[in-house]
Amino acid sequence: MGLFSEFKTFVSKGNVLDLAIGVIIGSAFGKIVSSFVADIIMPPIGMALGGVNFTELKTVLRHAVVDASGKVISPAVTVNYGNFFQNVIDFLIIAFVIFMAIKAINRFKRKEEVVVVVETPAEIALLTEIRDLLKK
Image (cartoon, rainbow, N blue to C red):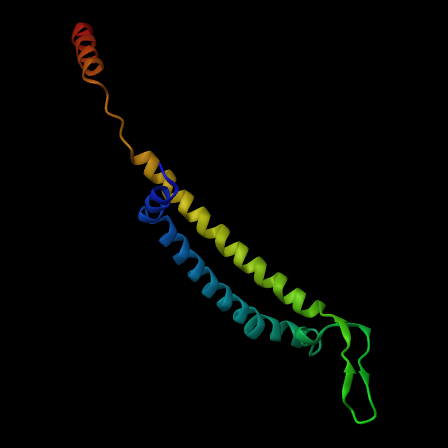
């Protein structure tokens, strides 16, 4: 099978479409969770901690160099651990939602597996009937 025909088979199965839809939905979900964390979760936490704005939390490694007119010659070098903390919370929420979704999918798969009825072959069914008749 040639590379082109193999690719055509792959695309026609719908795998690429499923993947594209998953990426688009995942990207949109990530934006929603980021907004949820930044706009809804972090402000009350910051307020409870004394009015801290997590996006402004940083450690300055080197201060900005400014000339006499106020123009920045060299920007400050900072470690923005507040943004990192916010991104960690984003990740934990997304990971938890994905975990719950996979758990629900697995539960449905297990139920489907239980519903599967195995047909006994005709010979075994006949032998079972004969055995039951002989017992009587």
